Image 1 (spheres, helix red, strand yellow):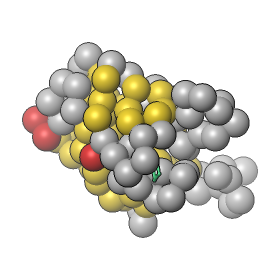
Image 2 (cartoon, protein in one colour; image 1 turned 90 degrees about the horizontal axis):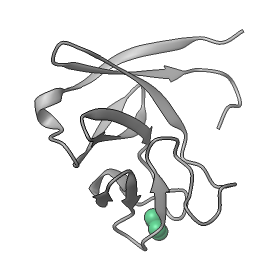
Image 3 (tube, rainbow, N blue to C red; image 1 turned 180 degrees about the horizontal axis):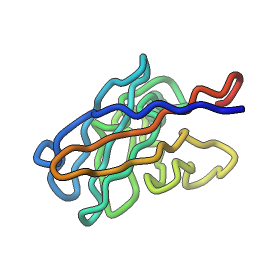
Image 4 (cartoon, rainbow, N blue to C red; image 1 turned 135 degrees about the horizontal axis):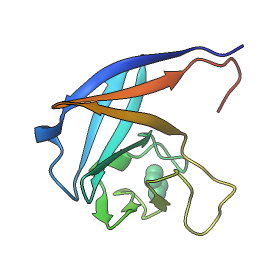
Length: 110
Ligand code: FES
């Protein structure tokens, strides 16, 4: 049994192409990215030491954490060198100008 909740987190105008935006929803910090017009969302707190992933440098679909340079694929949250490390990805929907993320509330999920 799983539940998820959908949150409006931004408007499209706030995330120009090839940029990131940090938002909060449901008590989580979420990193949004616009990759060639497609909005992606992953956990916004870096698995290394808690850096603000959304404030890093986005190159294509790869984000580099601004604190120590860990890199992740924003389309699935996977660390580029160590795939076992993964920032949780979130489902994104865009309705008109509004960007929504779905946060699952499965107990124990990471
Ligand atoms: S906190 Fe992100 S690389 Fe260290």
